[in-house]
Length: 182
Image: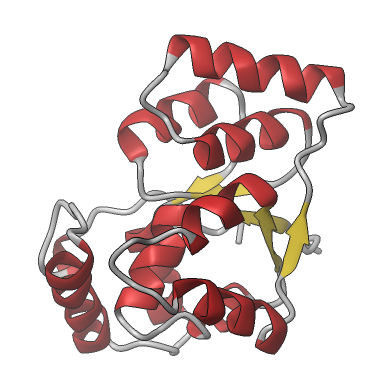
């Protein structure tokens, strides 16, 4: 039997789901797993200059969908050192991505991020399970929550409204990894 997992959701995933009007669907897609937002991600996600009610949208989503907001474990020396090592080696990564990656390195969490260029190699090198936004859409299709048409509309909307840089316009063209760990 598979255990329920904690999914550390990064800012880019939250932004794509908010921009497309699908934020409440995230917890439904990942059920029975738990979604967690690290404080670093919360700060990034709620600060959106072009959208005055972004913080309220995220706060409402956290309450409605019972999302767990967690503090960065700054007293965990391994996590803290890893965070600063990543910051030094990859200064362009945001604090939210660094926090998710360093926490998952020493925990059992899954990282949900759309930044595969930086996050995927790190996760693979450190044995961390991870998913991207398109993987989340594939999971939603596998569970019958979205159709291929719903996914394609999501992709188009996220590209247009949130400047998402997905490699495909049609979910059927997306070559996903084995997602059976979720």
